[in-house]
Length: 125
Image (cartoon, rainbow, N blue to C red; front, side, top):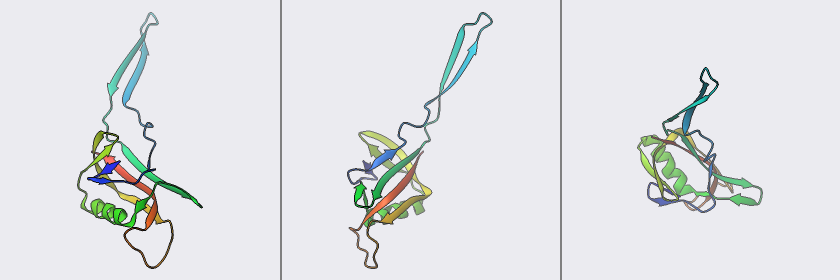
């Protein structure tokens, strides 16, 4: 996963990657009982949720503090950026309130390499 040219840490998951419908479908029947199926592509403006999870001593993916602060800056700017997921490119913006992170180890002396878990919510534009 690459967001705005920055490679994200291993283990992050696109939660619900295949949950959204890609077509609208209408099924109707003729007078003789034959099925008529009509398909129409839907706009692809879907929500993309990139998740790093932590449960006690088990962690699946993480973000660094420097990544989290960069995400907050991008969220404030509202600028469209490129999300590269396994070679597929998506134009996205960070959803308002879409940087939902917590430090793995809480402390008063934070540095840029501290690790965070949470969810980054992008919207395809």
